[in-house]
Image 1 (tube, rainbow, N blue to C red):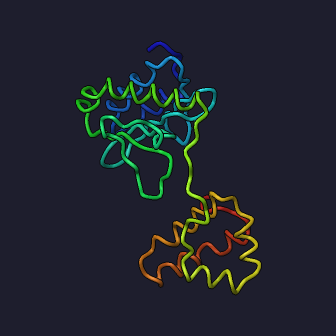
Image 2: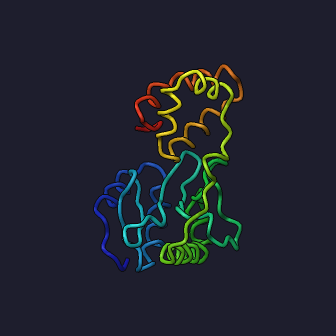
Length: 197
């Protein structure tokens, strides 16, 4: 490896009980790009360009993955990028379930990392859906109409926090579930906080 290793990443990999070999190999491949600095964010190895997040290594129950923060802008020649959920606008993953998959795709991985670095260097941004494009569930709209303080608090939230709430409320298929989700987060919204604050 050509660059200085981050001790937090060393500790993370030493303690990993699942995907250890796969994540170690992904680290070596990503670190082959000399422009990226190795960092440790959100409890995972993260690779940055001038302090901007480019790619993250993370593991899940069924797979481990490289997550490209601006993956929606990558040219996916190999059709290997995955949108984690329909609500994820910018990031894309390449998923792996074993070391041989990583080895067989090493050149593609390096190409996608190179592309991601160029995108970050260029300053390109992923065009995000505007908050007004998110549907407001009727149960939440009714609460907003009935409570001026709630309406004011919701409007004062950052667009990202507003989108997170609208998305979460809308995902529930049953009105009863939407109601309980809304009820659970009313005090958070009135306090000017996002879902995860």
